[in-house]
Length: 267
Image 1 (tube, rainbow, N blue to C red):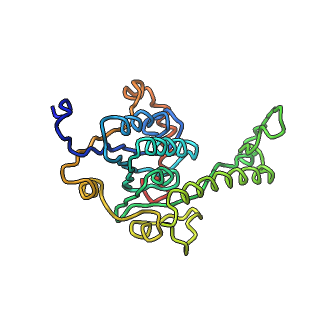
Image 2 (tube, rainbow, N blue to C red):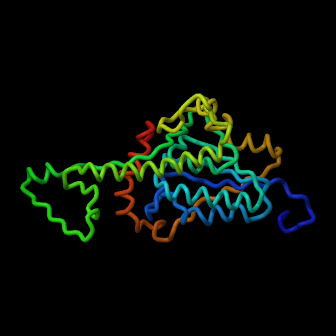
Image 3 (cartoon, rainbow, N blue to C red):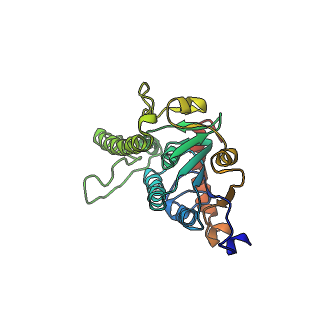
């Protein structure tokens, strides 16, 4: 009732955006993308008069482009509304998940949270020997000499490897620039933080990847008072996703997602 009586003083409001899952431009259930998260992010910054916005992050990473788009949306709105943003890491904010965390002004972790993995990875399989042993002939026709780059059914081409490494280098540098811009002189000068290595809890804090060990509710009450109100906001899932029409996409994506979590000892 109080929200309909503007002359009554409102308790401080902190919307909480839930970001849990791998990051991918994919329709599969649980994937995080700019399209999926956009309504929740917009609502958090524009609905009511919040004193801050909190991000609850649990992500092993994924698409660099989607990570960048989501983080950029958060920063645009934070600057437009002049609101502080706090990220709270659960199990992991690594790789693209840490890209998202760096969109916040302050990053808080649990003693067991994993942060870091500031790098770029691409993986695949070489199957040319397998199809040869099976007596299978591979036929590929292209217009453009680079259209079959990294074809897993052909022997590895050193030029293809050099090309993909150059692309990875560009993405890695964009990631590094984002972290340096957002974390600034809080980053430890004595450790190379950009090798893809990751750290746990207080070690991440000591290296400047996070600002402290803290949990969402008590930290927000400490900063904004015991009467602070929380408004949980999650990504919207489409009708087809809610009723199971994404089964095939989920099966294929599930294997990839489990591999991302497993990289940090999680399942």
